[in-house]
Amino acid sequence: MEITKRPPLIDEVIIKKVQVISGKIDIEKEGFTLGTVVTTKDGGTTWNIQDKPIFTAGVYKEDDEVFHNGSSWISLTNDNQTEPKEDEPNWKELEKFDANGILLENITESGNIAVLVTGEVREKHLEHYDSSMKKALFKNKIILK
Image (cartoon, rainbow, N blue to C red; front, side, top):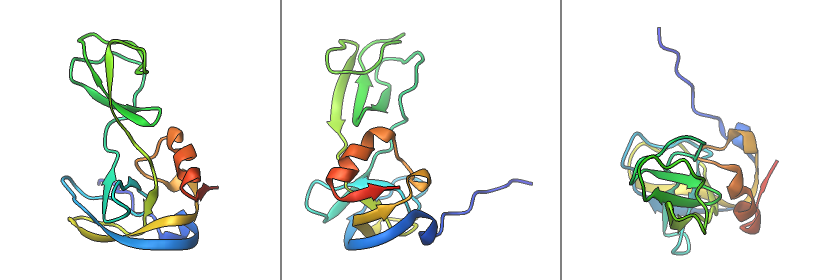
């Protein structure tokens, strides 16, 4: 028998809602749960998710993509064992991820969603989250507890 993890409840993730907006998100895979960290670059009309694997020490092939220290990176070489960073010739930074929202609902298909843009959340229940996002979330008035 397979055990599946239930999606989190709103009270498990959200401590305090101060400002919530509605925006559009495109879903390409299986969907996302309440508590997923998102970003917008157009003032909240459309939202995106950081869906690259988090960098861990290991061996990467050319064109492997990872998320590390607030940015997505692409490996430029095979047998790449270096850490992605600005002055590292084996990696190219693709995009900074300015975490500025938290999904307030579970979503399985593209459409409109509610996003927390100001408030307090429980860090341990966030999805698609990396500790490098903490500073961006704080700057954007989302406090992690």
